[in-house]
Image 1 (cartoon, rainbow, N blue to C red):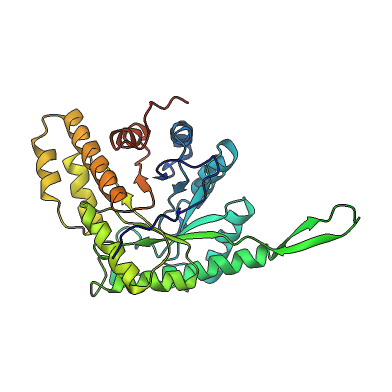
Image 2 (spheres, one colour):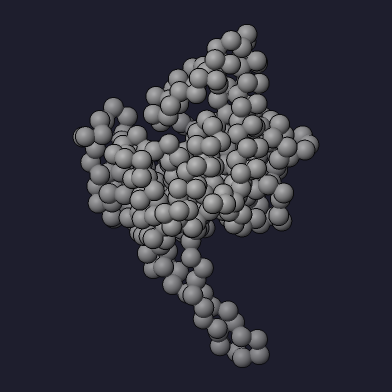
Length: 324
């Protein structure tokens, strides 16, 4: 079976790039951190990404700052912002209000997620709220957008007061995918079933959780295609630049420990060498998944533009230093 699927995950507003790429950033803990993040956004935007996504705290805990960052990207750059939305613990009314707020601000691209339990809350004690899955959130986003903008009007030249009415362009909704299975999955095909449900609900693309070996992603895409998933599946890559970060990521995601990467990080003599190991590993992943037919790459940025751009340069995705 062919691994290749070359449909772009999102349209490029600034012209086609040889390899589409995108970034994820997160809002700062306080408003005092916004200026530094805006500097990072300026540099990342100058690289020409297809989009920049902005995370959303559990239970909407960073809604205001997420929206501030999203609207900054929308107004100050030519890069489309993508809003993360989670639904754990939300009522329909609460979720609808947040979706409307983002739509009213001009945000039309979303990443719909079930979301993690609030810190300190066990999975068994999670209050799912009215929305029990990301697929239900996908449906709600589409329904709210249709209610807010059911159609668009275009004036007919030469006919005063007349307009041509057309359906509004639908929002673009991405969803999560899990190459090595979600930690709560009961069997290896449950994640494919969930992705099919999200696609049926209206998702237009998927972005994977991090993985450490190219075949994790490529084999997952093969299984998904065989099951009927047709939306683009964008590989999510996270540069791991220290042993402590690797330990934390494994704790949060439940991913299998990558012994080769872990060993290389442990023997690196200093933080600079560890950073070089992480960049080389992420760049190698990017090259391998692109060679296998990935439609682009999505980098989890940790709000660090220098590391992200170093990965892109090392992978051969961009050639020059970015100055902005």
